[in-house]
Length: 124
Length: 354
Image 1 (cartoon, chains in turn brown, orange):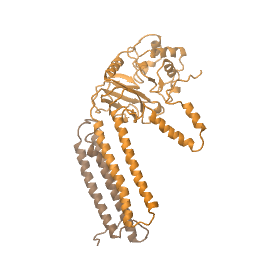
Image 2 (cartoon, chains in turn yellow, cyan):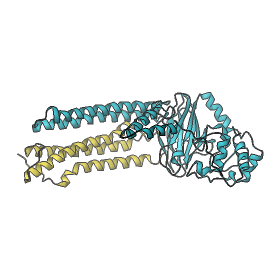
Image 3 (cartoon, chains in turn brown, purple):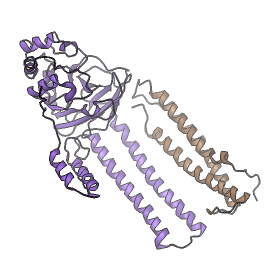
Image 4 (tube, one colour):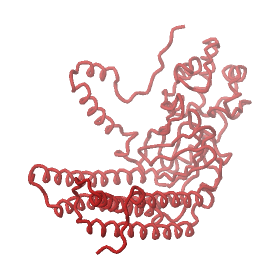
């Protein structure tokens, strides 16, 4: 049923939040680099906004893939949110479900981080 | 030397408040004053976003109430769900039903928060659009506010505040109905310029000029504060904002541009002889120090010592004699070594500088 399965560990668990962190860092640096000089504050900053749009799209696709894969494997292992078995499958299922929840949180967070770039057009 | 108690500007009778407090017992000792404090805070007309007198403060108040409603709705829904899950229907849920509850419990706050965020972001660019009124430079300095009216400054472009303009301190006059551009900077540490009744706060940063566009909508006198801890006398770094008609504003700035009303006499001589001029300017005399507040029209202001004392000859004398006692942490040294008679002469002169 499952063709290639991820062997989940702590690294796969934090992959989505890591993408969120990197997206936040890059967005912040891009906006700061454009606005720190404090000159021409009424001039539109199209470049940084496009860049933020691009990295946002990449981040959302990557997080979406993680979400989709974790969800497929979690379902494949029977789904559910009760984790009280100390078997290898139970462990996998728990990590997959946690990954799924973290991916959902990261997805929303990336959207929230990117929203200011959608509405604020200059360095005012 | 007996310490004379200067007349302080207080919001409510502190002594009576203390008497009521000490009569309380048990939890009421904490709860009642807290509720009372919140109620009293809401009554203050000159320092409240709820009794707002500016377009931005009105927007902030509106935003606050909408966010409050959003938060209350989220709270009620989450509480209702938790009551449902633990009391009203306290059976074992199927995995499917449980997941549905979790998804809805997360989705609902997310959607409400997203809507609030989008609305908040949409408000911002409009508030920061170019001004149509005067440009005023405000410099936050330990522990007072240097103000220069009608400066020639590009909006937000520079690293340091534009020089020139009509200098004053600790009392900011603004024309009602005009969008005034406030250029905010600092020569020492980070301060924050905040007039709650008129607009949101803006940091005063060394090496950078921030801009805040304020539009008072109602004539009156409002309180301004430093909203970023900056040192010992941070809490005594206040100012007054006087919102007046455009004509009154123009007349005020013209009057402030004039030299001092009295430029000679014993008080002026003592002021110069005792070194006050090393830090203070009184235009029309030899005093041209730029370290402390410009005193050319000191007596025209409502307060003394950055919003600390009411303006009076007696308080000026007290401020000169026991500066560090009246305003702990102040940069100006006390001049208690001077004979009281000389202090009174200087205070009488400064008190005449309308």
